Amino acid sequence: MSQKTEIDPVYTEQIGHGNSVAAWACVLTMMVGAIAGGIAFANLNWTFFWISMGVVVLGLVLGGVLKAAGFGVGGSRSGAAH
Image 1: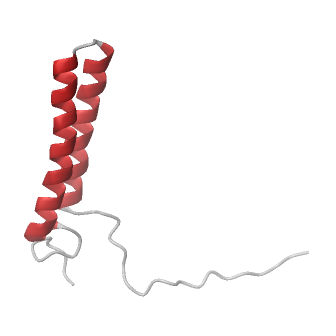
Image 2: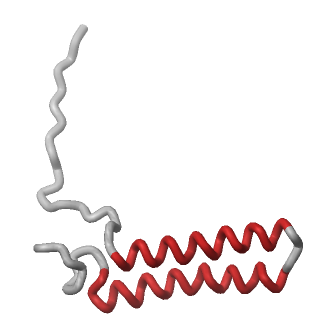
């Protein structure tokens, strides 16, 4: 038995998928912090570990600040024509 089904697009606007300066800065900063934290954890260097976790939090804050400044998806300074 064969059933023919069609996929009907539900979305009428383009989804950004986080492809913006704010998203990239947030993710890359958090990734650097997480990798450095993993290395510090493996070497039992607790001071460097907690500094690295601070970098992860800083990345989250950086993403929010950049989004508020207009560098997020659809932001005024994102460079995307809307």
